[in-house]
Length: 368
Image (tube, rainbow, N blue to C red; front, side, top):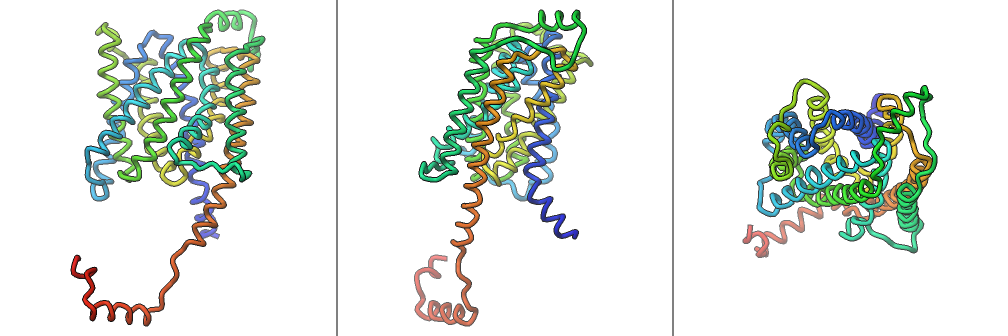
């Protein structure tokens, strides 16, 4: 019984890890929105966020991976710099800009595009293969198209507003008045954010093949986030008083998002990405949208547009078409890998072959 439970837990670990991360992201959406209402600059938040993440992750990376950490090369370092630019600088800053221009619910719903965009980039960079003669590939392609349609519905159609949680009229009016209406600019920023985030997972997948030390890679990305994000913040934010934070929601946002959604998330995503690939890592984002919608309605008194809800449902349908195709493809790959196992050589036969090679003094042994 213990063995069966251990085997089951080992199989569902990637699923549990990614689901847990979605709860972490949902909390971040709410905390950062509260932080922005206090007037904190998102450029500075990115720097503080990765400073907290570096402090949380770097000691574990130094101690736990000191014997298995690969040697740093220029090629690997360039990829790490690219990772620091794609996720901390491009993704997070554009996401925060989009969050300010729309709402927490809308921004989290738009993240549902992430699996589809990641799949497209994975096909372009030949990480994912597409064979239109197979049902699994057709499901992924059709699901990607449906996801794009859902995003267009969210962007072009708003519809009436309603509350997920019943409220008094005064509270509803206050929430509606506080909701930003710059949807076009916010949508463009969110689309660019998703492209940057998808690119991060693609480059991460490539980097892990040369630098298979997940904790160390996460620590390096956090350090690059501080350095590169700090350069951008110094250019964009000239007021030195904006860097001062106290023991309030701004400190909470930096610490929470840094430790949970950067430090821990980078490590967990690296581990799962190494085993399951970038498309699997991004397949759980709809859960974050559901959690965020409920929390935003309760804590921030946000109202939901009907168009956002319809678009999100369409995106989820397309997403799980992609996931279904990916799962079917995965089963096929498992069968193929078993068929390609090397044959077992008899010990006596092996010893005879080795003796013959030694007698002939082949160049193979001379080279070594």
